[in-house]
Image (cartoon, rainbow, N blue to C red; front, side, top):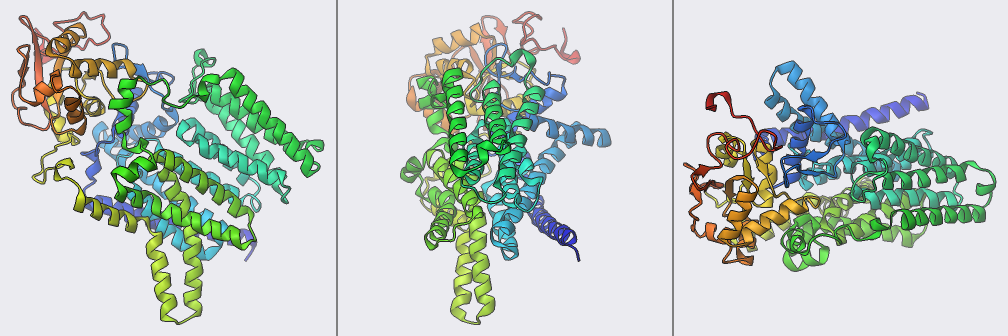
Length: 629
C-alpha cells in the first residue's frame, strides 16, 4: 500500500471516530429531548444570535449589524461577525425550502450547527494527538476530548454563539501546524484558520498571537523546513484577513477603528504580521542565518508595535476600561465567565476543580517533558498554546474553555503511554495506574465531582428551579408565552430578560447584557433603581408599554438590594404604582407583566404603540388586522 493510501486510511479512521463520538453525543441530547431548544439556560448570546440571523433573513442588510429592538430608539451596533450568521442562515433557508416550516428549520439549525462543529473539533483533536504522540494517542484523544467538549457545553443543541466555532478553528489551526512538516498545504490552511478565528471574535486574539509567535520563533531558531511553513502561514493569515475585511465590513466603515470587533485595526495588524512574516521567510538575505532571521523578525515586531501604538492607541486600554462604573458594578462584575480564577477560588472552589484540574495536570506533564530534555517542535506548539490559554483562564474563566480543550492532547499522550505499559506488563499495579490516569484525564469526572460538591453546599435558594418545576430564573421559552401573545411595544425589563424577550416575542427592550448597549442599560438602571416617579418619567418619555418582572432572577435581587426603596424593589414587594396594572394571568408567574397606564391611555393596549407614537417612529409596529380600529 502506498503512503498516500496509508494517509487516506488514517484520515478515514479519524473521521469515523469523530463521527461515532458525535452520534453518541447527539443520541444523549436526543434522549433528553433537546431541552436547550426550549430552555436556553440563561445563555443570552445564543438567543440573540438567533435573533440576529432572523433579522438578516428578514432582509436586514449584510453589513448592517444594528440590533434595532434593543437599546434606545435606533438600537445599537453589535460587535459580532456575519461569518457565524451566514452558515446558520443557510441551514434555515435549506430546511425551510424542504419542509415549508421556518420554526422547524430553526430547530434543525440549532441542533445541526453545533453538532457539526463538535464533530470537526473532535476530528482535529484526534489529528493533533496523532501528530503529537502517535497512533496510540488517537483513541484517548477522542474519548477524553469528546467528553470534555460535551461537558463544557458550548456544543450543546441551541449553542449558536461564536465560542464553539472559535474553538474548532483553534484546534484546526493547531493540528494543521503540527502536520505542516509532512503536508505542504497545512501551514497555509493553518494561517487561514487563525485569520478566521480573529475575524469571528477578539476573544481569541491571545491564541492567534501565540500561533504567529510560535511559527516565527520556530523559523528564527532554524528548524529544518520551518521557512516554508512560516511563509505559507503568513500568506494564509494575511490573505484571509483581507478577504474577510472586504466581505464583512462595509466600504463606508473601512476607516473606522473598532477594538472589540474585526475592523481596520485587525486588518492592518494581520496584513503587517502575515505579509511581513511571509516576506522574511521568502527573501534569501533575511533568512540566511539565525542572526539575520532574529533581527528581521525583531524589526517586524517593532513595526507591528509602532503601528498599534501610533495608529490605534485606544486599543491598548483594557477591554472594559471605559465602561460606566455603574455597569461594571451591577453587570460586568456579576458575569460568570468574566470572573478571575482568584475570585472563583473565593466564591466557588468546586468550580475551580471543574475548570482548571485537567489543564493544570496537562501543564505539569508538559513541564516534565521539558525537564527530561528532548523538547520537540510539537511540544513547543502545544505547550505555548496551553500555557497562554491557562493564563487567559486565570484572568477570565471563559479562557478555560480553550485550556480544557488544549489539555486533551498531552493527556491523550499520557494515557497512550500507560496503555502501552499495561499491554507490555500483566502487573495489576500497572493496570490500576492506567485506570487512574484515564479517570483524572477525563474532565467530566472533575466536573461531576465539582457539581456534586456544589449541590451539597449551595444555598437551595440559588437554584434556577425550586424543585417544583417553577422557572425561578426565567430561562424557559414557556415563561415568555404570555408576553409573546401581546402586541408589539417597548418592554422595561432587566438585562438578562433582554435577549429572551427579543427571541420569544416581537417586543423592543432597553437593556441587554452587551457592553455596547451602554445607553439602554443605563436607562433601565435609572428606572429600576430610581423612585416610582423616576420610573414613570422613563416610561412616559420612551413610550414604554409593558414592564416585565422576574422576581426570582439573581439580577432582580441584586438591583433590589442595591436600591431597597427603588421602583424594582417595590414591585418585588408587591407595591404596584397606580400607573401600572397587572396583565391578566401573569400574577405569580415566572415572568410577571404590568401594562402601563398614563392618564386615560393604556400604552400597552390593544395596538401596542400605535396610540402613543406616530407611524414615522422606528418603534412603530402595525396593528394586526383583527385588532385594527
